Amino acid sequence: MQVAGPPEEPREGGPPGQAAAGNPVQAAHGGTGAPGAALAAQDTAAAQGAPATQGVPVAQGALATQGVPAAQGAPANAAELARPAKCGGVPPLKLTLVASGLDQPTYVAGPPGDPSRLLVLEKTGVVRLIKDGALQQAPFLDVRSRVFFPSPNAEGGLLGLAFHPDYAKNGRFWLHYSSAPRGNVVIEEWKRGAQGGDSAHAEPVRSLVDVKHGAWNHVGGMLAFGKDGYLYAAIGDSARSPSPAADLTSKLGKILRIDVDRPGKAPAGNLTSGDPMIWDYGLRNPWRFSFDRLTGDLYIGDVGQKSWEEILVERPGQGGNDYGWEAMEGAHCYPPGATCKPRGLPPTVEHPRSEAGSIVGGYVYRGPKIPCLRGRYLYGDYVTGRFFSFVWDGKAAADRVELTSALNPNGLPSSFGEDAAGEIYVVMFNTGRVYRIDPG
Image (tube, rainbow, N blue to C red; front, top):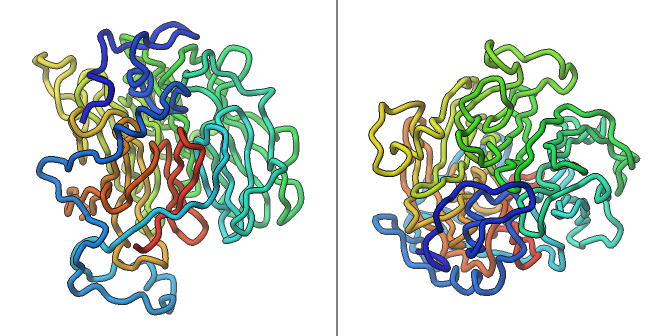
């Protein structure tokens, strides 16, 4: 499905402060790292009732689930909880409203070990607190004076958040944002005020990354800790052409891997040539990635340029990968119609422009509420409003099922999130709402 017509030519980003002219969807497609405010009701209406993906089964709201076990209480232990149930198909699902009235929300996350709290990022620079299911009026943190984006529908702003694995005790967390006055990409450490408190200290602890970006899109924005205890960070390629994605001296178009206790020392396993923080390269705009909390597999959603959106899956510890941009877009030579020697690792899943226009990476479900969803990766698309899923079998994506009809979304997903228990949330940028994926 195409929204508001096909993307216009050329598809490269303009100078700071200049959005692509004539087509608001084109601005979003550059990478959804804070989708443009111009994408409004007409996109929402177009997203509803999107046609089924050709060749991909659609999970209906009343999908038959032969052999689906009833969810009778919590499993006996964490290992049992993590194991996928033996089910036939995808169970009925729904979106449950958790919070509304947010100002351009870009991400949601739950502190480890704290089932009562969620933090929501607003693009303008406010971190909002949802406590015991209620959106609190007082912000957890306000960094609006630090945040910069060059135009209303630029992709900068406050984009990423990661909690230290031992956050409950040490209160350490990190933010990813574009900083005033020039739009540099900044990753900073911050600290919670009091243990179990509802606010953070007003000043950062220290900066880990401060890199020149200078463009209105392709910011990246994701932060997450791997099972190895290191912080991973995504930075887009700033829409330059030629792209710096394959330049190992640049942090742009990369996933970085950082030792937060010794940020000046490269963790073992990072690339040994070029920038010592680089883990993976050859990415265009890795807007959202996540780790499977059971297996440690890394799932990356990388936004395409003209024809293909892609999801990449990487086994734990197997970094140093070239994902091909800009020689390749998905598994195809770039630009379209060109001939080339294929470069880099191919995607696990790719979607043509008829199905998706700006991919949003999600999460593998590992929560207690929906046993028959465990082990399934859920993700979406910002332009079409469609939701997709598959199960990674260790070698390939299996059992691909579209979830749009099952979830019946009313909005355009800008991010997914995960709470302390492993339940998955959806952030709707254009409606200012956060939903939880629940049993249908």
